[in-house]
Amino acid sequence: MLHTFVALVEDKPGVLTRVASLFRRLNINIVSLTVGHSERVGVSRMTIVCEASPTAGHRIAASLYKLENVLQVDDVGQLSHVARELALIKVAANPKTRSQVFELAEVFRARIVDLAPESLMIEITGVESKIEGLIQVLNENGDRILEIARTGRMVMRRGQHTSKVLEAMRVPGVETPEELKAEEESAAASDVLMAEETGFRE
Image 1: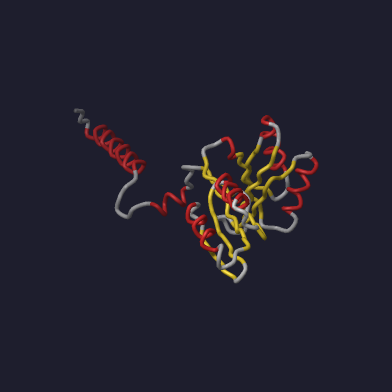
Image 2 (image 1 turned 90 degrees about the vertical axis):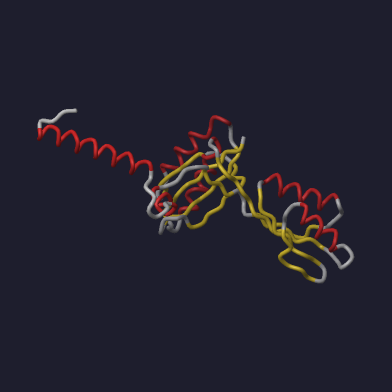
């Protein structure tokens, strides 16, 4: 079973080595690993896809969290999420066969990002099955694949917004439901206080 973990780590030397060593000690194979900057300064986002037993997810997440410089670990494979992968595929093509590769790229909603006399490069973004499908069709058509570079899986949970994101999404002059509720509660409390001071009750 494939498990997908997102770990927020401090952007310091040696963090990647510690993570890789952990999976070696656990005797678990890493299928893909991507690292990049996160929305926080000095914090990197690491997406790890590994193959392990269905019950191993909690143990892996707990072991990751114990590592030095690891700030947060999320097992997103069990939650609603969006997963994407990017691949660059260089295919041998001459003037006679280019049109066929162009048509195939259009079917898969891919792009031709480089064109040379004897080859062309395809860029495709999507779920893993979409990329595997393009590679399979290229092989079936006899198109010689020269190189493949893939980013590995990138994942983000659905519907999880931080307060910073919500603030950025807020429309000026429009109060949120929380603000309206707070104002109503404040107004009600003021009415009660005024009634007690004046001795007036409805």
